[in-house]
Image (cartoon, rainbow, N blue to C red; front, side):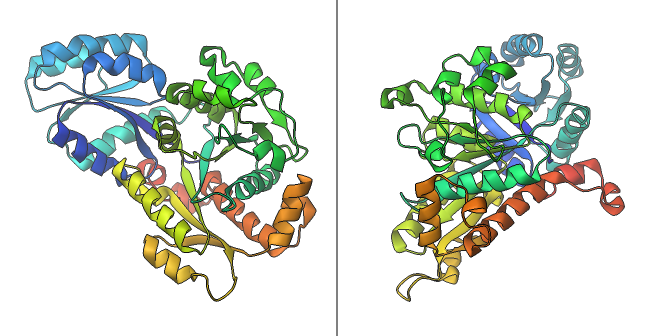
Length: 395
């Protein structure tokens, strides 16, 4: 599975922030999950977000930043801390290194220098526990088919994967993942979010309802009011605990682009954007992509799924949709409402309800793509590539 390197960035320098974001967006497998402009917020941010690297801008007053840098190193000895400064003063560099800084990078940043520094962190983590992949599924309107796609992909992946597969319902108020799979959860994501500091593997296991296919379900809250208690930090903490325990985590959502939704998207390896060939869906898709772009999300991680294609002539074509959105379609699902609605009403996966249907076979191919992108290869030629080349290779 592709290794992902996650960043927290601390700098009051807007120009440096934009420059770093632009560099990271060109590197597959590297994500900025949080940005802060005050050194005093570093420890708090590192506690809220699972990260591998904290990049700290020492300018314009290194003496004011170094104490906080020392604090975060002591609180998180496993973190790789990068320091950035325009200064080439030897005593300053030596002091930072003695405090635990792994890399001292000159500002303005050079992309190759940054990439080489990241690769050294990646090498150091090659023997760490395997981290599962996270796929988020975003529907561009209600009823677009996102939940059916999410649950169907999860079931297909469960048949392919060696490790566990968990599906998470991020529609905290009206999600139907548990209904689509006909399971009755005793606990929900709200229960895990209420005490993230106690998320031992056995606690997580008790919160998951298991489907006959092997898929485990983390359901939305039973009561509407519980949705208000789920914060961005607690939700991110749940995913940080789920990912090492699973080969694949599939999230139905996020359905809102609030801080919690953005935090989950920052963690995701692939985002499936589900669109039907009608103008309102496409317009919403344009807005979603614009929001992702504005938030610094690498759009190379977005995969377009066109659902209910092949309907009457009054609907848009695949070319209409892809040219408007500016991204190609990973898959086009046929318009087979009878099969889809039948599976939904019975709470039965497409793989058992109608295993030879075109819609099931199309979703199976999507799952194969997702699994293949993470499974890696033992091919001798690929093994000759440099580690940094494999880490940053496009999925």
